[in-house]
Image 1: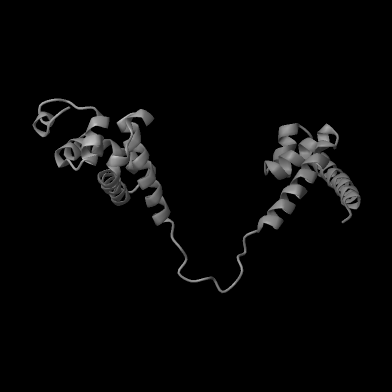
Image 2: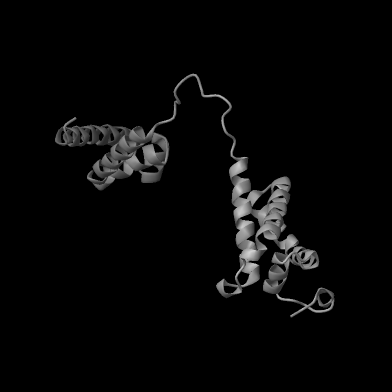
Length: 191
């Protein structure tokens, strides 16, 4: 077993340094800090993207190590892994602290769609996609180019190599067939 004086002369494992730290050995803690502080700070900075928060997480990590090093058990895994688990917890705590909590509740309801509205929108989107898939290919392609890719009628005419009048006529026909198909679906669903 290494004595306090031996710590300065030999390279102890991470687990041995944690065990000695758990016994209150500040020299072992200093060596542990110098061995890991840079890596933990770098990892925290990478995750938190804020120097101050990364420094806080690093400080919290080593404060927790000093307090709980006696709970480390070498048979559960290497010391470095234990130390990084402590660091992960400190980083998570810092992340939680950075999430701003509203000072006051808003006076009005949110304009954003709630879960039921999002579910209904997803259902309607699925119906539209199914209806478009049921169109003849030339009409389905027209709808896709116009409404999902945002092309103008003249751009569609150029891409498909057809006159713009044909694009307009086919677009009207496609929309009419889509409307009929969607009305059918709504009828089947009880709307």
